[in-house]
Length: 581
Image (cartoon, rainbow, N blue to C red; front, side, top):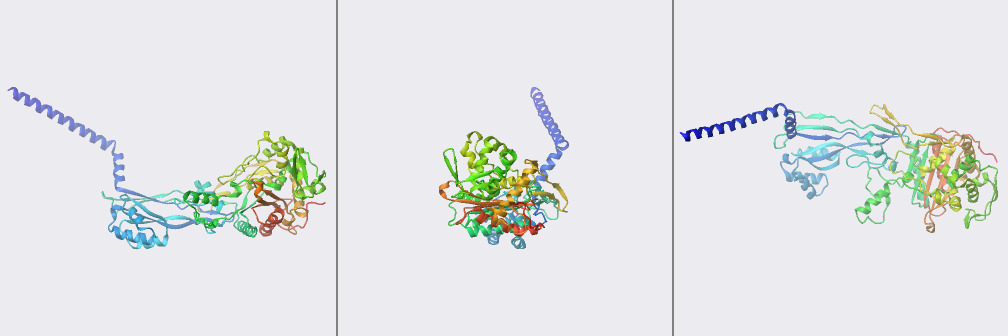
């Protein structure tokens, strides 16, 4: 009897435990079906759906007149789905042949067990079409986009280029990435438990949205003229490199920005442009050479501006009231400042001269004298006021800043040399922007390339605006126009003179560091028409061989550029000179 009672109790306990477990399971099942249904449905879909990205077409880059400077080419991406492969050896053989890849590399990718393995991207469309015709099971050929630059080297260091993922790496391509990149689409396909796509089931497709178009202030024709002029002087003078800027001094629009030698944007990782005597020793050396090749010297590199900076000293002294155009000076060929003998470029000296003659002659002692009149404190005040302590704010990455003495360390000798453009460094874009403010009525403008963002219908999505600031009186600016026009019509800038046009400008020849290397930089900045400048150009020639004077080799470059672009811009000849002796 006792055993029967014990067995009944045992059975009851087991039954109750089973019931509790069953109720718990039912409750858990109900919870999952009611409250977690959406989550597990998503998990199930993820197991049976394969998502592929459809790359969006990157937005085009066009010049101010709509000429396409950067666009897209259709290319293919070749991938394999391991679970769908039927004849692995055949796939390896065909892909290694068509893609011109090492068989071992292809085998490694094809035999890798993964849901989808990319074999090669940026494959020419005709090659992708051939692979598609083989109808290889497990091999996928997806159309993609590759950046294409129709003019190869034109404005290469300005436009920049994209990487394998079609994202901007340097230049405008990276600066305006958010507008150009677009939005990728997706393709969803259904697979079985083995990962094989099921036939007859419609795929879901989310179409990509193409990027917007970036319209620049650059003018294709002016860029081409400027590049031809820069390449010509680089070849003739066997220079290391040449930078040439053309901009509208009234609003800061950059019409051309040349840095020769340029590089082929469609082959940005090729060092062919550098004409190396021997190949780089390792990857690190190659990357350093590539970085050097990609540098935009107009904004990334600083240099001693030399006598073109005398424009600043003149403007500051006129504005401060320490200079009168009729002031007399005497140049014996040097000036003693403290214990330093600082020479003029004319060894025998210019003798007695007025300030106007001093600027026409680019006489160092004259500018030492007026610089010392201005004094260190006011020199730095105007240096800051004219924006030279700050970056210009141009819409390109990597702009370098000014390299300048600390004011507390500047004595008479340093001030004397700074007054004619030595012992400090600025960028070419900084010099061009500063000279613009001296001759455009006194406005400090922001140099820029980006003008508008357009959609695919050509409608304006965004129009960029840029800062302007009055830094110089209009009266001083008008005087600067006259003085610099006289430099071209009667002074050291006469090789930039064009019959019938009012051209203003200033020459420069500066020696690079160390001075013992005897390397020079020749430059010239010019603008036209002198009384109402619509275009300003600066050329900087690094380490020319033979004659290196700016008035001799740099001024003619700007004359050549102006001879081409002034008629193109509709600027008519007047035949009059602003300056009368």
